[in-house]
Amino acid sequence: MTDRQIAILSAIIEQYAEIAAPVGSVTLAKLFNVSSATIRSEMAKLEELGFITQPHTSAGRIPTDQGYRFYVNLLTQKDDEPGLPDRSARAIEARVSTHGTRADRAIRSAVDSLVDLTQNLGLATIGDELYLSGMGNLFSQPEFMSGIHAQNVARLLDNLEPWLREAAPNEPLNVFIGSENPIGKASGATLIISKFRSPYSDNSYIGVLGPTRQSYARVMRLVRQTGAMLEGVL
Image (cartoon, rainbow, N blue to C red; front, side):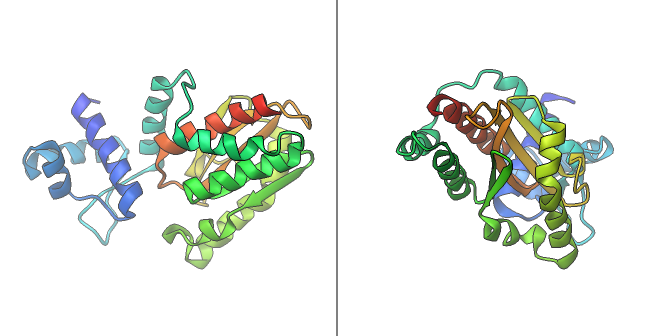
């Protein structure tokens, strides 16, 4: 992968997250100030690598799960340290800190804040229960409006709580993209969760579930910072 190919893949992922439509060479040519032919050549190489694909109804390209994984790994390498909370994370902390004496309310408040900020479904483990918020956000996404996709996501949600209890993902931030999901492989959904210590368990989780078409840099940072913040507050 050349630096330009990485930049083009990143641009396709970020543009697709915004517009929910395949990204064409003309758009990218303007962005990179090169010819459309140059962009098409680079896109062909990215397609050969399995990082992007061309929907049959469009001349544009969309990322594959493999492309998203490459991109997320890049983000993870750049963000080994959590860093200072951004404005959104500070807003969550201000909202959560009012419930500092009630762990369950603090966690629910953090989830509800993530729902508002990411427009995804938010989730957290509170003791032996899985708290879910923002179901309407999830099923209003264009990816999940057809019956079969909605059913696949519903199956994932049905099995999420027992899977979290059994698998206990051990990283501070865990990202399961599309077919990587150990449950709901056909859901076309991405699960981004942060592990944190709470009065209920050393393996408590908070995060979001949404389409693979995500603003990964922002959502990953927000989920990671929220998990760290909750651990500090609780």
